[in-house]
Every structure is written in structure tokens, then in C-alpha cells.
Amino acid sequence: MKNKNKLILVLLVGFVGLQFSRPEKIDHGMRTQDLVNVPKEVNTILRSSCFDCHSSEANLRWYDKITPANFLVNSHIKEGRAALDFSNWSSWPKPQQNSTIYYAINKVLSGEMPIPSYAAVHYSAKLNAQQVEILKNYALSLSPRKVADSSQVNSSGKQYNSWIKGELKHPTVKPSPNGLEYIPDYRNWKAISTTDRFDNGTMRIIFGNDIALKAIQEKNTNPWPDGTAFAKTAWKEQMQKDGSITTGEFIQVEFMVKDAKKYEKTKGWGWGRWKGNDLKPYGDTPDFDKECIECHKPMANRDYVFTSPLYLISQLKKIQK
Ligand code: HEC
Ligand code: HEC
Image 1 (spheres, rainbow, N blue to C red):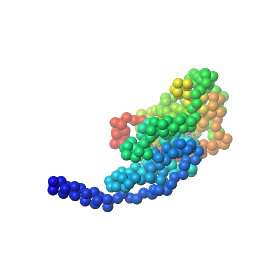
Image 2 (image 1 turned 135 degrees about the vertical axis):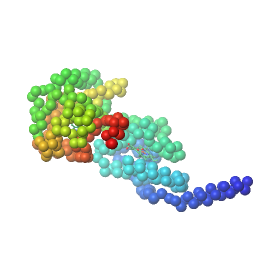
Image 3 (image 1 turned 30 degrees about the horizontal axis):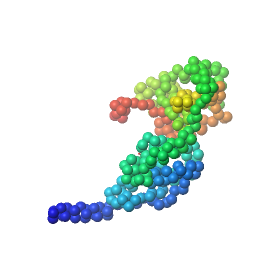
Image 4 (image 1 turned 30 degrees about the vertical axis):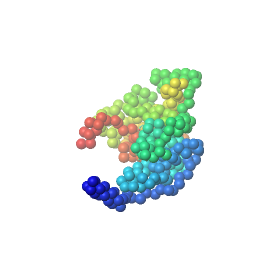
């Protein structure tokens, strides 16, 4: 009995001692405004379930302030805010607001957010089925995908078939304003990547020519060798009645053609975009490609190319060696 009391005392002293060790203070209590343009009931849910870690307002409970729980909660808040801070909502352009909230709600539907271990002890963060349904319906209302009617399905089907058969070759396609020629043969190149823009409802395929493929095989992709060419096609995503998604209307094809010398002024690449079924060259002036370069700039240290070849992990280790 005496020993047991001693043990409790030691634990108690240890616990009290532990309280002097504190994580660095974080700002909280700054009330975050309701998200503008978002329905009230969605705001209410986000505030109670997400704002603790994703806004300037962290509503800490007494048990979050006790060591060691406070270390864990603090790190959640710091990382959470770094990943997504709803306090900045009103400074974002509308498309960024839409894509962010759409993505965030998908994190809820997939069960990743709110962090399950946190929701287990913070009842206000835990979402019930009805709240999840509200979020889901809101996300669906933001999606640009609407069920296509049968005439749309027919016409985009026809369009796709003619794309496959190469009827979109158009010998008369005009060059891009900067002089880059359209390359009808890109449809015979290999697809090297695909991307899906859930927020604007497009699907894209990226093709590489033989030189690109050889460079990938030889792991000679930074910089890419002269002669490398990429094409990126984009289609509208078309939703069938059963919810399945197929390619809809053809939006555009874009090219990047590498020649370090010839295209020295435009970062070593020739840039071009042809829009719609009639492949109308995009851009009003020869330097329209400034816009392309500006957006590809984050990839400056990967030769301005976003698509990075996928390697098996075992291969990647070899490359790193
Ligand atoms: C206990 C803190 C906490 C709560 C509550 C929480 N999150 Fe997070 N969230 C994090 C942390 C930490 C990260 C960054 C690490 C990660 O991605 O897992 C994160 C990341 C995210 C990301 C970005 C993921 C990425 O891939 O960049 C989204 C979106 C997100 N949370 C949405 C939500 C939504 C929506 C809610 C409310 C329904 C929510 N979170 C509630 C802590 C939290
Ligand atoms: C708003 C930003 C943005 C602008 C503007 C932009 N791109 Fe891109 N581009 C991307 C992103 C992001 C990718 C990666 C693939 C994806 O997400 O679909 C990409 C990929 C590409 C690719 C495939 C090779 C790669 O880098 O992965 C080509 C080719 C391409 N873009 C051409 C162009 C041309 C030509 C223009 C100008 C007419 C242009 N892009 C303008 C963002 C942009």
C-alpha cells in the first residue's frame, strides 16, 4: 500500500513537472470570418470541424493545454495551417476558392479529415452523416460536370472518333503567332502522363515524341535534349447518366518543342496552343508565349516541364546513386 502511494506521488510530481515543458506558443483566438459565397450551413460545419487547425482561430479545450497533449495539438495546428488556412479565404481568386473547398470536402469524404484521432476526442470536430451529406451536396453543386444529354454524347463521340482517325489533321492549320508549326503527328506519339482537373472538369493527356521517350529511358531529362517535343491535349469531362466520365468536347492541344539555341529567348522551348475542333492558333502577338512561361516558371529547375517521368522506386534509387 505504501509503495503504491509513493508511485502515485512520483507520477503526480512527474506530471506536474512536465507542465513546465511547453510547446512554443501559437496564435489563436483570432476569429476567422465566415467564408464569403459559401452557404451558412457549410460555414457552420467547417468552423466546428476544421477551423481549429485550418484558420487563425483555434478553439483549444482545457485538455489540449496539458503536456504532452499540447505538443501534439500544436503540431497539428501548425502543419494544418501551413497546408490550408481558411483565414486567407477572401484574398483568393474565385477559382482558387472553388478548387480549394472542393478538394477539402473530398478529404472529408475520403475519411482523411478531420484527423480521425483528433475527432475521436473532440466531439465538435466529428461529423455525422447528415453533415457529410451537406458538404457532399455543396461540393457537387460546385462541380462543372453536369449530366450530358444524348445529343451531346453523340456529337462528342463523333468528334473523338475523328480525332482517333486523324481527321483533325487539317493540312491548313495555321502556325502559332510565334512561328511554331502545328504537328499533326502527335497523336502517334506515346502518352506519358494524364492529369485531371476536378475543379474545372477537364481531363488531359500528355504525349512525348521518340526523343522524349528515349530521354526518359536514358534518364536524361534535365535538361531535355534538343528535339524533345511534348503535346498536351485537353477534353471537357462529360458525365453520363450513371455518373461515369468520358471525354467530351475537344478543348485544345498545346506543344512544347525543345531547341536550346533556336528558342533561347523563350527558355529553350517553342510554345504553341491550338484551340477547338478547327485548331485555331492561340495568341494575338508573337510574344503570347510569355503567358506559358510565366505559369511554367515554378518548374524552372526542371527545364520548365511539369510532367516528371515515373520510375519504379528501385530505379529511382539507382538514379540517385
Ligand atoms: C487536428 C487538426 C486538424 C483538423 C481538425 C482538420 N485538419 Fe486538415 N490537416 C491537418 C494537418 C496536420 C494537415 C497537413 C498534413 C496532412 O496533409 O495530413 C491537414 C491537411 C489538410 C488538407 C490539405 C491536404 C493536402 O494534401 O495538402 C486539407 C484539404 C484539409 N486538411 C482539410 C480539412 C477539412 C475539410 C477539415 C474539417 C472537416 C480538416 N482538414 C480538419 C490537421 C487538421
Ligand atoms: C495556368 C498555368 C499554365 C499556363 C498558362 C500554361 N501551362 Fe502548360 N502546363 C501547366 C501545368 C500545371 C502542366 C502539367 C500538366 C497538367 O497539369 O495538366 C502543364 C503542362 C504542359 C505541357 C506538357 C509538358 C509539361 O510541362 O508537363 C505542355 C506541352 C504545355 N503545358 C504547354 C503550354 C503552352 C504552349 C502554354 C501557353 C500557350 C501553356 N502550357 C500555358 C500549366 C500551365
